[in-house]
Image 1 (tube, rainbow, N blue to C red):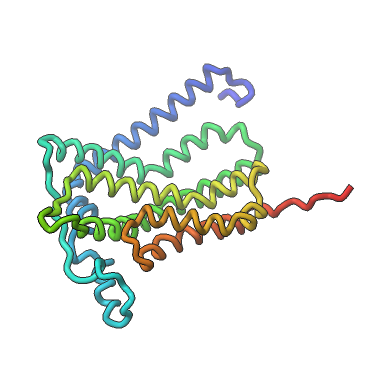
Image 2: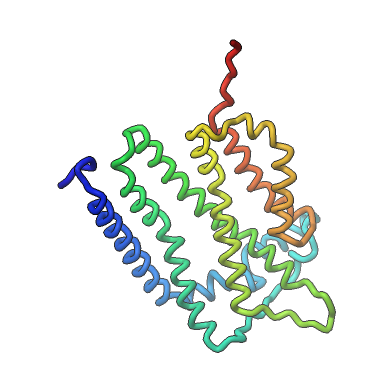
Length: 267
């Protein structure tokens, strides 16, 4: 087998082609598996936030009896009617959702395969650091997707589905609109939770240090509050804090794991 230094450009290209083929095959197989079970997944997972028996709503209703803190729109009975207005939407969403679920679940495999391609070019300590970054990056991503699913998306859905511009307008959520919001919010939260990993990477490159976080902490709080307000447009303090606090926690974690500000030498 050729060593890294002996491989030509075309050898590298052939190796990359094999890796991309393995990724495509793995995601494709997972897509077929999800396609076979997608009806059960839709009923019990994807559409679960549309029903009042969703565990977050039940917890709010139970907790409100002892803590009168929760906003009105998260209490009481709740039901969203999801309708299909396009003849082919159900079939294409069946396929596209199977692919996106396969891509999310197969995310660690995809990143590992790409990492294996660049690994021979790294030094031993760089390989070790990259391995830890790969491990924690995947954990953070899935935690973010989970937070998006159990908190951010249900609260956003519950507020927007119950909002009425006029009593003459009846709310019915289209299947396409529901899935766009579901996938966007869950995937976006997964990416947001990669903030500590991104900060660590920029710190290793010498671009970012702890002084940046100390200097711009007040600015970050304002910006993160705006982001939380955009993600959850209900406007009530409770929902805003539910989304803001995890994101701000990521900011503080990032401030801890980056390198300290270098001490300027006095000439």
